[in-house]
Image (cartoon, rainbow, N blue to C red):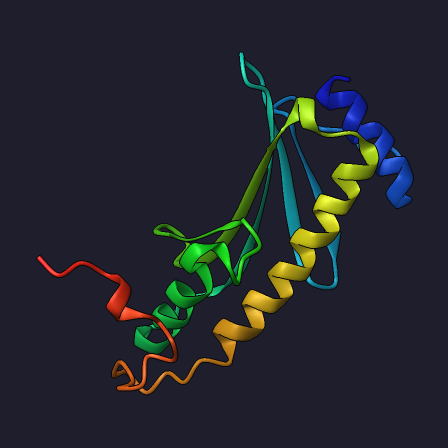
Length: 150
């Protein structure tokens, strides 16, 4: 199945008429939680990438960055997605990819639904972080004992 066929069939399953990638292989799913961009990558390992803006990085980001790192640790709070910061927009961004050969329309729709749930959960976690500016003394199970001190 090609990327274009996957997107068309998944779009029909999600009730999005005419869902198709543009000339750059990108299409956007818009909802009340924001936009999820979908991009296809051609080559020896064809892949599908989902990305979405989570929330702005606050000017006083100490606690928010700590929450982001805790959420991302071992992918536990992100369900395998990658949490990063876009340096140009100063926004936290969530992304996740899957190899095209592993997807069919049902698996892709499930991936989008799981990604949307993760987006909401990570957004709530980061927006709820106390932005007092200082790193809290209680690191909330960050597990610093797991790190090697050099």
